[in-house]
Amino acid sequence: MDALVSQLFAGLSLGSVLLLAALGLALTFGQMGVINMAHGEFMMAGAYTAFVVQGVIADAGVSLLASLVIGFVVGGLLGLLLEVTLISRMYKRPLDTLLVTFGVALVLQQLARDVFGAPNVDVRAPAFLSGAVQILGVGIPKTRLFILALALLCVLALSLLLKLSPLGRRIRATVQNRDLAETSGISTRATDRLTFFVGSGVAGVAGVALTLLGSVGPTLGTNYIVDAFLVVVVGGIGQLKGAVIAAFALGLLQAGFEYSTTASIAKVLLFVVIVAFLQVRPQGLVSVRTRSLA
Amino acid sequence: MLALTGVHVGYGRTSVVHGVDVEVADGGVTAIMGHNGAGKTTLLRAAVGLLPVRSGKVTLFGEDVSKLRPHQRVRRGLAYVPQGQQSFGQLTARENLQLVADGAGSAGASRMSDALDLFPALRDLLGRRAGLLSGGQRQQLAIARALLTGPRVLILDEPTEGIQPSVVQEIEDAIGTLSAAGLSVLLVEQHVGFALGAAGQYYVLESGRVTSSGAGGADQEADVRAAMAL
Image (cartoon, rainbow over all chains, first blue to last red; front, side, top):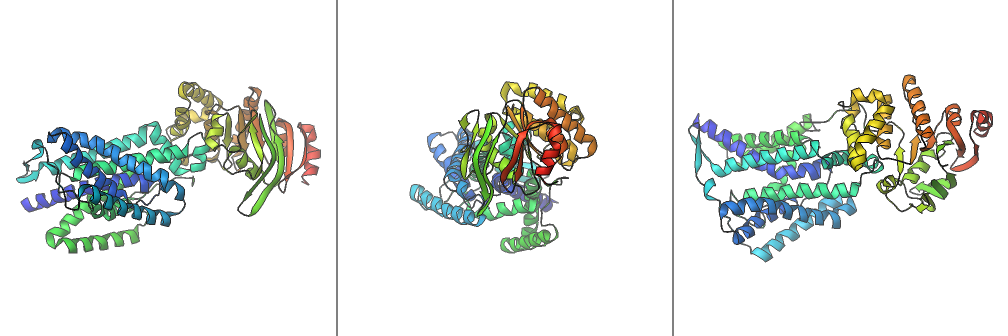
């Protein structure tokens, strides 16, 4: 029983990390179709932001909360810069986008090495997140609970933004039919930039959250980028709901496999499951049906 | 108003519209007629900015808007209802309208109720996803959405094509109401009888050139049919 609860929680926790990493991509890749390989580096930038902010604000609790906000802005601004300078010039060339953003990812990693040095740095977790909570007889680290809550909060905020705000309506309209959005008086360029800002900002938030789980290094993002893309593809393009289900499903599966084998074999098994799944359902878990194509 | 002067438009290496002059009269309906493939839709797409003009210019209220993006032209009073009853299928009918009302500021709410007064049938469908509406309902939604931009010139590309007959009359009546209220309408229409009946002025487009034009009116129908070789 204890083992089951603890694996279950390990899965949920892994799922929440995957979700945070994938949520921004669900916007920039899922909604806009941009393959941004530098998304992981925006997470890395968020993580280093937490490190820098902690250097300024000594109180770990205050600095964590400030970092979440500043990390969002830092990630968002990096995304905006990338969109305006490079991605906007190659919206119809996905392969070029992939290669260019991969290059940008390498540049950003080297930049982090030059600024912060090659060795990893640590961010102190606040006192109120140290220790564990006993749930069904199993000690669950508070940092993991915090990340789970943060991931759910981000999902809620993003779905409210998409569903209810004017920006959300503009994003959904632009994604569906760019020409029609333009002739409805919407600046699709401005919408693209804002979408990219928000999506990259969420990556920054994810990076801040990751500092609670381990140390921060220049390659922090590369560990998550493939998994994040997997979550969006398995979840189904264009729907946040799909990404949420996929993140937790993949997290639970991987934790389950890891329980019975090693971490590397678990990863292999996970990929096998995903490949098999996409054979049966290439459109992903959640797809959208309408009467018209538009 | 809206004027296209010596406009050339094309796709890739193909040229589709060759030096067309069209002027939309102030108030009233201007009709463009022509066979499939004559370049009508291409001309309209250039007028709203979805296609660049290769030479010539598009002026709106005396301002050269040839280099402006579509949304900038919309904000200057040009609205466009493309052919094919296009809507944002995954958004509800209400969201389709609200989307445009968002950009209209304080005028949004009153424009919304005006548009719904014109097509009362939409009121009961607001909560439904636009992709699940019928063709006729989607066309009414598309016209309502264009009206929410607060246009002074409204471009309609074959508004009654492929629509169930019961709704065609409603749409034709709505066009009459709008033009009577002072809105200038540029109408592309295959249905010669209706187009000429509504139009104060017409153009016939043939292989990308204007081959005939004149004052509208139902009595012109025989001449226009002859010009189009119908």
